[in-house]
Image (cartoon, rainbow, N blue to C red):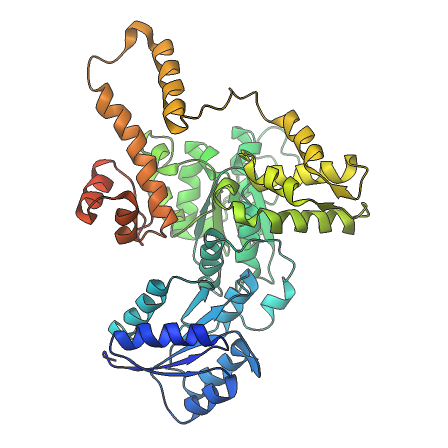
Amino acid sequence: MSAGATILVADDDRSVRTVLSRALAHRGHRVRATGNAATLWRWVENGDGDIVITDVIMPDGSGLDLLPRIKRLRPELPIIVMSAHSTLMTAVKAAERGAYEYLPKPFDLDDLVGVVQRLLAAPRPAPEAGGADGAGDEVEGLPLIGRSAAMQDIYRIIARLTGTDLTALIVGESGTGKELVARALHAYSKRRHGPFVAINMAAIPRELIESELFGHEKGAFTGANARHAGRFEQAQGGTLFLDEIGDMPLEAQTRLLRVLQQGEFTPVGGRQSARADVRIIAATHRNLREYVNQGLFREDLYYRINVVPIRLPPLRRRREDLPLLVRHFLAAAQAEGLPPKTLTAEALDRLAAHSWPGNVRELENLVRRLVVLCPEDTIDVRAVEAELAEIEPDLPARDDRGLSASIERHLETYFAAHGGGLPASGLYERVLREIERPLIALTLAATRNNQIKAARVLGINRNTLRKKIRALGIPLDREGRPW
């Protein structure tokens, strides 16, 4: 396929059709745009179009419902799906029904044009629909909530993994929902009818980890009075979720690596090996790259489990999702028999201003306390202030100098702690590096890793940004995203 392709656009919003038509025509493509599903289907039936871009909701039908018909008639025709109803279910259904890409509205026009250009430069059939026998309907209630850009990225990753057995590593702070994502990956996989077995490495004594993972035979050690089936055996045909894998002892890491390499495990004290028919999903709040550098985590095991990295954003970086989460927790509390409650706008604003070190789990616990303790049907800002006062540390009075004051306080603490033990030289460069590194990493994350946009936001040249990424050691994944 070459430049000058014909692109079919279906969206009931005239402004969206106009913007897309102009942007794609500007790049030399021919665009045919319609506001209904019937016209789009007629064009496809007639053999028109090299790429389809369709909305989900249209006056005469659903773009998602049209996808299987298009794929049966013209399986080679790539389809890009857009949707303002940007939930995990929408993303997964789009992938299951053969969409090449899913873009939530409002989307970045450059992102969509970039997808089109990639399709034209490297044509390939859209992925096969995976697990389309009702998997989505069975797990409609999975509480992955949020319409922020960060959560849309998570939905798209889960959708792309539908029907695969690829190993995934979920990274995120405590309380961000790592197990929920693991359960969603299992629920939308071809192993969804098998068991989902979870084990938290941080909660098991070191000497018992191998027995918990691989099981043990009777008499294998003192106290082994009966045969014990380990988590690998319990998860046969399904998914094994290794939570907090960064806390796994090195000796257990070695055995786990051997199982992943050979696809077999042997119970402690046993002689007969068994096939490990499980999909591995791991999670950690640790920086495993740093653990590898410190010799605390095996590098070869890291690459075995980090096939598909999924990085969950902390709540403070997706504050726009907070009202949705609050409504969900209020509804959940009511479903459990607690009285119905609502929050005032001022109360929600106050919640949004909290730093949420415990992330979504902290928010859920706070909402439950408010429902139980607040006698009024409407929870106001005073009730929220009273609860937050119990958990927020005493903070110094706000300084109008903002960032400068924060850095000053940090340096005062640094000097007080080191006294005469300050470094002989290089403190200026060291402090600049400490500020530059998170500034650039967070800007890359905020611009969805678009280095041109990030350089523009930072006010520096793109080549300068690239040099700083290398010099500051900001690690990027295979897709160029900051770790």
